[in-house]
Amino acid sequence: MQYPEEIITTNKQGKREVRVLQEKGQYIRYNYLDPETGKKTTKYSLILKSDDKKEHLMIIPMKTGKSLIVEQKKESRKLKILDEKKKKIIEF
Image 1 (tube, one colour):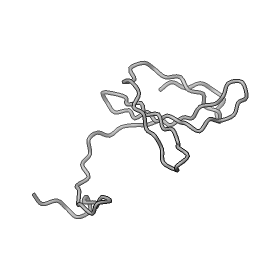
Image 2 (cartoon, rainbow, N blue to C red):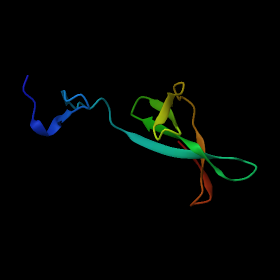
Image 3 (cartoon, rainbow, N blue to C red):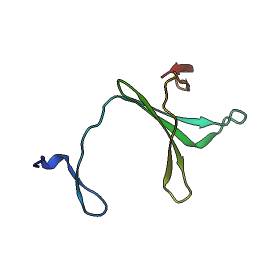
């Protein structure tokens, strides 16, 4: 099959691959604080939201410089998150 060159990429092994959209939507990224000290932890979460579902990924940075990505159970509930800049709680 023929694909336009601008959608083709090369992976680390040198194999060519076509980038294909699976879904499109919104996202939210948030980090975690220690509630007693107020200090940030190194882990953060990324929630990807499409028209029909949410996917929750927790990203944990490792000492090697890479990150461990853990897929959480499917998010069906509304998540409440503190917006520090606006000083209010938002729902996503």
